[in-house]
Image 1 (cartoon, helix red, strand yellow):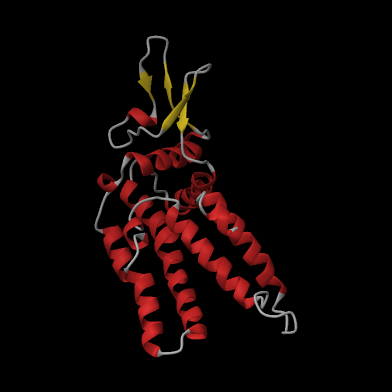
Image 2 (cartoon, rainbow, N blue to C red):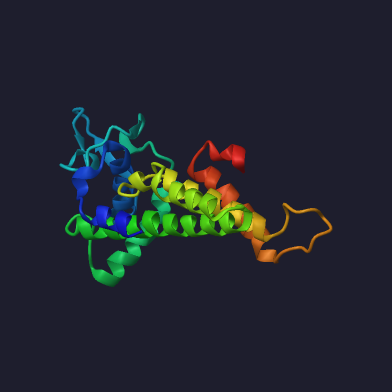
Length: 215
């Protein structure tokens, strides 16, 4: 967690690519302009709007040919959820993503990526403790989860993969807690474990299409 937060705080918007800038633009448009629209094209073919501003340009956009309005080509669920987070930040701190961009983006990245990834590693440690035979195997599994995937690399940018991975891990943890994976003769786990297992399995598919197979 310390490594991910430190790395997140050490970079600025310049680390963003067109991929995550497309999502950031939608978050900004939803809260500041109350619309999903990130740009428009006038009768002379000149584009304007968030997507044309320095530091906000992106190729991940689509245009409605009838209205000449541009929208992010990214699925809208994640940016919509994050817009709620940005709205809370804006209401309580007065920060805006245009004037305090670093502070807003760092806060959202820590809450959306770093904290869930830490919970994911804790859940993997719990599962390792439950299933491994030797201490070395448990240490290896948890260390691999923390240091041997691209998830911690992705933690510094806005993306759907970290959210989906955390949802998958949570769904597995809840399924284990529900006892549903054990023989029917065993005791049934708490009701909330079943609900959360199903919710996070479905949520993971909404975040990352390959997770549909898992769901």
